[in-house]
Amino acid sequence: MEPEDLEKLVTRRMPFGKYEGWLIADLPGNYLNWFAREGFPHGEIGRLLALMQEIDHNGLAGLLEPLRGHQRLS
Image 1 (cartoon, rainbow, N blue to C red):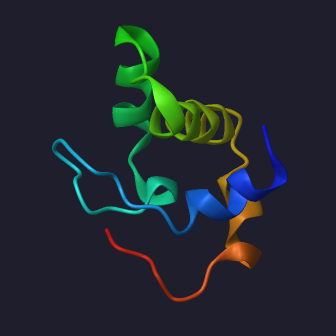
Image 2: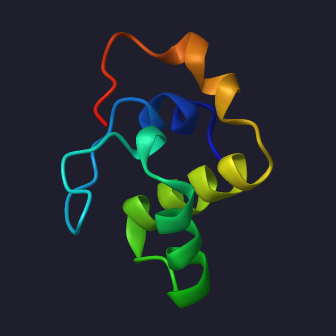
């Protein structure tokens, strides 16, 4: 993980799928867990989804709040 990855979680939007357009930090845990079971995509998006799944799974999503602007989409 790179330090800037945490900021990317609250600024990057999901580029495809059921939750296209949602901030990665706002994706539901069950969706992140599905990727964990089925396999994350290659590249940066997969790395960010895997990071968010770990954060969510461990109940640490609140740590991202200070990094947010008012960008929440859910």
